[in-house]
Amino acid sequence: MTFESLGLNPQILKSLSEAGYTAPTPVQEQAIPAAIAGRDLLVSSQTGSGKTAAFMLPALHKLTDLPPEAPQGKTPNQAAQSARSRGERPRFKAAQPKMLVLTPTRELALQVTTATENMAVACAACKQSPSSVACPTLNRCNCFRAILKFWSPRPVV
Image (cartoon, rainbow, N blue to C red; front, side, top):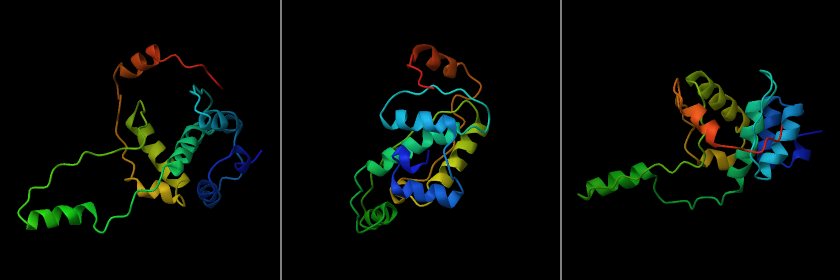
């Protein structure tokens, strides 16, 4: 099986070939089509089996399906500076994330961020989004266990 047969966007396929990925792992072969179809995943396998790519590639694929943002004449910083120069007080604009990835440790968050940036090198739609930020979400707390307790997916893999 190839990444092309999994139905991924051509931009992502180009990034994968540039990053040196040649064929999906067994975990990816099962998880990627299910995730693209919108099914929940609960994947448990050995280190190095491709779990990160198994859930991030479908997420990046969904980002490429989003309509492109309309180009503006000025960047947000330029618009804010212009407003300040006119004596206006620019309003705070909250971030508009397109994806949220929760990890149990800071180290895993950094690993996922690095791997995702490598997988999205040639993806123009992914570059329109602000750069990924790795946060130590759910680090050393029982929140992760609570989420798993109340979230009851139908395991695919």
